[in-house]
Length: 66
Image (tube, rainbow, N blue to C red; front, top):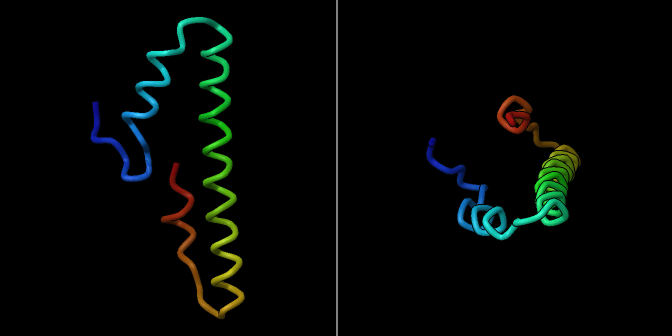
């Protein structure tokens, strides 16, 4: 397994996955992952907008990696 991302809370997600012992808990875990990824993307978008408002350019190639 590769080294965990700096922004990826491996231990937290590992614990949540271990606790997901039925379908409803697994679906809740999947939804949490989706929501947190969406929130991260919105935060990046807001930061870009703020930097652009300050007249600074952002590098979209580094921010768009998944």
